[in-house]
Length: 604
Image (cartoon, rainbow, N blue to C red; front, top):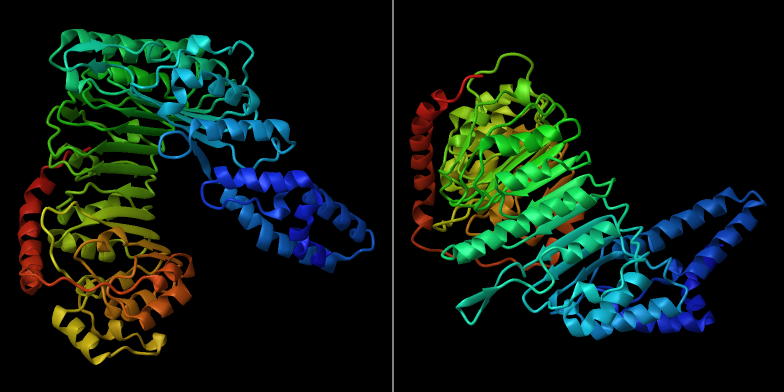
């Protein structure tokens, strides 16, 4: 039976249709063009049939060998195909190739077993001249589609009224991303007009024809570039209200994840409050939005019985509102996202973890704003049951070392921490090594968006050794070959990465993308000595091949590929000679300046 699996490649030639299949699939697969022979339907049937027959003789050992070979050869191939998305249009494949793909699937028996169900249709697919292609795709491949992404722009002039969708049913469609950039179009830099088909007609068709839809993302363009024209702002607002009304009137009963990137106001929120479904995930992009604190509060309140993930994103300089949270007893993830440096128009009402988020497990403050409103998420004192927080993402401009100890007792169950590095925040990372040494299992350190680049060696940060000692160890190659005698534990005098005894996952790849780097000192004295570490993602940095080879052997999942990357030359500039002194002076300055703000935190 094992030999039949190994010879399965030759079975492709037994049927002429599978030779044709390889030709067509070669044109449409994203990365690996050919379907593995072991995944062809009649090959699978024959293998299973033979396996059953041989099992009648009680050959358990043979069955074990067959399953082992199947997992080694076929399972990996199936997984590599199942995660792919087939792109059509624009920079990928022409509408004509999509038509050929439709004809092939319709004329063969491979439709039900085709391993890809995720599709991305670009703007030019929806031109009026391609209406028949869209019609055939939806009807002939409708049962195949599980995920569909549609992007429209000003050139997408197809009239949905020309589609015959009365009998269309996309029974397997679970996820839709509808990115409509046609909402408002400037013509000749003077006149303005809306799209011919309306902003949500095609979206309404997809929602109505997808009874099992579970995840919906709607994206419409902001109106910032037309703020000087009151007519356009009115049209834009009416269109977004229409989207909200369409969702309320045609909402699929299984919809559990909703993401909206539109311009919100009180009327839009008031309409969405009537959604007839219980959402588990809600994501709102609030750029350029202005509304009263009661309107969003009512929407969240209407979903309090089911909402588990809440993401409020894209808050910016043109956002004007106050966030006030109702009691959300089942909320497990809260994300606040902003990339603008100034968000003075956004404020947060006082809240209590115990009262408003008693079940919160993950807090994501994905922002680099210098605005300090987010500080109230870290109260200086907490009374009552501590929140069951297990995952925390700190803001990019988190520069308050005095808060780290506070966080360690505020979130005693914290297992995963995500934070940013800059030369001025090294003391914060050292305090993380010390105060979270007993419970942290996952750590990701990102690089801050650099306004200046510094040539900084991070060996002292990760090892806890002075810069001079690290340089001496590297120069003389003083690496202890016996892991049980750990040289670092004998020399270090500051907290180090090695203090995180339970750390299982470490990701510092983004941290090392610019001028910061690590050497063999960190590799040998820290990364190879961590007993619980199982996953390491860091890139090559300035480590030699020998050290990198040891790391690849211990952490093959991510580090094996780094063996093929050549060691990049390090750029030396005027900053390199003063990097260590700059880091030390910055650390002391921020330590003293952060105490005042820390003492002003809201007490709950």
